Length: 134
Image (cartoon, rainbow, N blue to C red):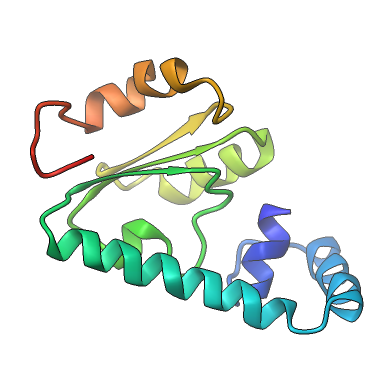
C-alpha cells in the first residue's frame, strides 16, 4: 500500500503493480488521488507549523515510504525518524534515505512504543532532553 500511496502522490517509488492497483481502487473510490494529496498537504502544513514553533525532531509513525512531501523534505534541517511495520516499506525507505544522516528508519509496530524509542535510530538522532523536539 505504501507504494500505491506513493503513486497517488505522484512519487517515483512504485511499480507497475502498484499503479494498476491504484487505478482499480480509484475506480471504486473516485477522488482517492485528491484525498491522498490533501492528506500529504496537511502533513506538510503541520510539519512546517511545528518547525516554525521550534520543533527539530519528528517521529513519523506509520510512515510508509517517504514519498513526495515527506517530513524530511518539508523540514530539511530537522531530524526525522520514520517508523513502519511493513518490511517492504522499511527496506525501500532505508534505500531512499541511506545518504541522509538526519533521517532514520525503524521497522516496528506503532503499538510497541518502547521498541520505537529504544531503537538505535531514535537513540542516535533524537535528544530526549531537547526542548526543541517532541
